Image (cartoon, rainbow, N blue to C red):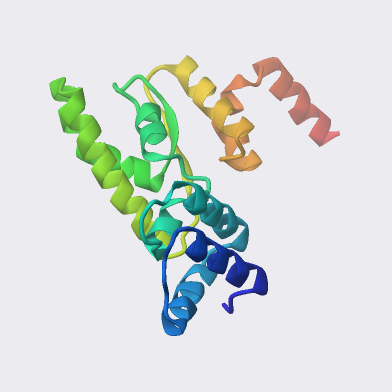
Length: 188
């Protein structure tokens, strides 16, 4: 994808305000690299870079600040279940990072579990963003049935699951008598 004029201007301003010097070729490559991502995510990321970067601007700085809907590492850690009863709606990266942390969680070493999760999650998110993948949200349902509903309804409010998927997951909430009435109405 070709960089837009808006993107080029935003990069130029960010480069200048961060004290970064780029050759024309380097600026062109940076613009091409960033044009792979949705512009509505890159422009706010560049704004954050202007406010936060105290050293030379890199493409990795911008990519790390993309808001593609994935939670930040600390927020993602706070969302993961601590036992088998808890339910969560999470991204593929969160689920994989949880796999690195879960043995430590069950051993009771939450500090080491958190460190393992954060390191793995950051790498997985960066890799997914480099591939241009948008987050994919899936439920992981725990053994607590009331907790399942809460996790699914929270995901619904955040738009993380499709309506059809939510209907399937919450089908048990429908009253049996109401389901019979609906079936009779369809036949008539």
